[in-house]
Length: 225
Image (tube, rainbow, N blue to C red; front, side, top):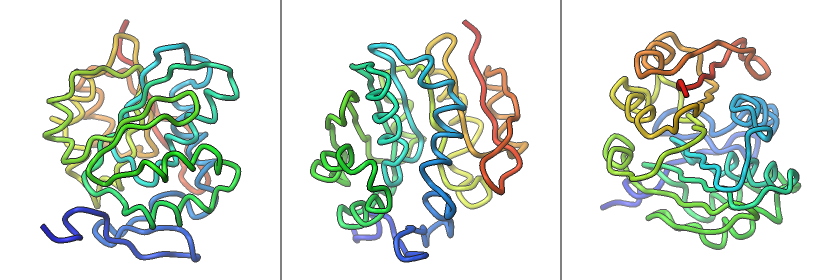
């Protein structure tokens, strides 16, 4: 197995913004990645309002771990412990690239330190402030069906559907729904019609919302109770 098979192939923009050469897409907004995360994935899932001890979040596309760190900061600020996070990642960053990308967010430095220390492209578990975190390595089309857990909220953060269609297939969106607790939610930066249809067909009540920055729309939704 080559290095490229094991970890993400990257180039860098503006010095510290990683861009996938495999999918020709940046890992986070060039304008303000953390603000984007808070708008799309936290507010899109009505967090922190829904957080409670034992609340479970899952993510397709761990990337730099920025969404995980933003979740941990959100839970920490709210005084809520025992949050669980599970991320599914096929092409993880190597540790040095992870540290370089997260250096862009110094306000998250204390939370980033254990993630950087425990990061293993083969998969890992670690504690990030109040969050017990796990990354499952491999193609989510295989690893998600085998997962025994269920999430109260999903961060759907694969690369753009036009560039990474495998992570938005209807069958995978159906698995997301199958691994969602009743009343659970999802949020994604994508408002592509095919994505909204796949999530609707999977059982979510889907709505378009105002996107972040230059993106006009995003979408979010809930499963019935």
